[in-house]
Length: 582
Image (tube, rainbow, N blue to C red; front, top):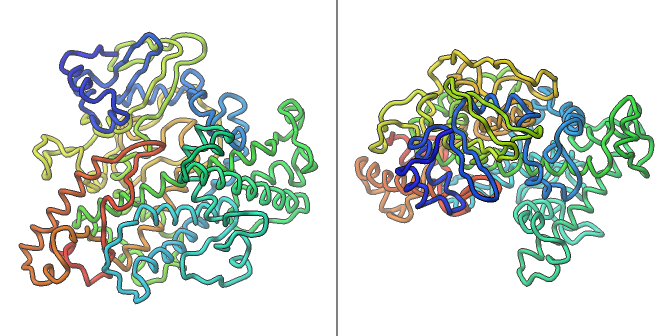
């Protein structure tokens, strides 16, 4: 690995002590030092890697480069789970969790995403159904829609949008109500949404301290944690009883599937009153999760799939508003596939690969290239001794115990791996900082796309297809890792892609998304402008939007806060800008 030279050191000195230095600097440190470097201090050795060859070696050898589990212990607030375990224990969690992530269930996710997207559209278009009002809470609403989808697929509970009325007995359940049922101080939806919003309080502070904190958000975090814990236990008991009675859950129900693996007729466990130890489970023919592990896995699947998917939907909408030409291409493709067919009748099997392999799939890939869910994917050097990797034919020794960060934002801008040309937006000599979905429409398969020799030959279940569609540009293996890579890649990546495809397709079948220009002109003033004046006005909004995106911050995931980039949703044919701006 390279040592940090003087020029790179000066860049890093300006930013390195800031929490978001990787997002602020992007590929710059690697351009100065090389695609991998180490920072060394008396207490630790940290590596940062944006080299596809090295990343493929690291992710292909899970046991040599495990996750630094100490950093993940905070996610065990309900129990050990697939994220916080390694080795044999992790394999057990993975194999028990993966049966939920099938194409049959992905079809149900797609259908639910389309249903929930229509609810969000009704909210955005308003009571008169006309829309064309400035929306400042888009991130809040994208968080809400993913919460609704996850509630349905994770627990079998369908949640309603404001103004929606329950249409059947299922939607009239206590869990679907906006009122807190007996024994709770928060509704099901409010307790979960509040817990996810205030999760940092719960993860980092003990419960006794939260009770003493003078801050409203801290007390609300504790209240939501306690309420959600009650809901989890109630759902668990109900699903365990159903499993022992041999009842089949309708639709996708991740928690129900986990419970069934332990309490179903063929499980190793026979009563909800006991929870087997790891030793007892090891003696059974079929491995079973303990009660706390079931709850732990159910919760982390919510955490993993909630904010990440919500942010991708939000950023995709903003980037398409910034890039009207790309938005028009997306709309044309959605129109070609679905015409005016109502979303509730869309055929998943017939259409999902067309969506993922076309302009909409390219849009998602490009959004995830520019703004992946996490800036760094942490790994460590394990197995009790140094490990060796090869970069450009040179052997590199990584010291045991070192923490290695797979730097996604640098990697995804490394010009070695991407089709590029001079930027049309900035003065840079490449356009890798620009949102350009068409770069994925260049059908070229990388020579080393196939996995090389790997120590990971086991089948760990879940979707085993490629991260990107066969019909799109295929990056070199290890150069595109929004869902990580290797055996420990995201179990729900296909599910996330399907959710996002459904939501975006519903929106762009009927509507356009434009940046709001209220800061510079009133609606009346815009209506009197010439085409050239409108283009000049919209360019101001584009410039500010792109600057604002660069101000994103990362706590758990990379995100913007509500209100930062206001937009307008307008019905197709009523646009003010996106039909005249490129």
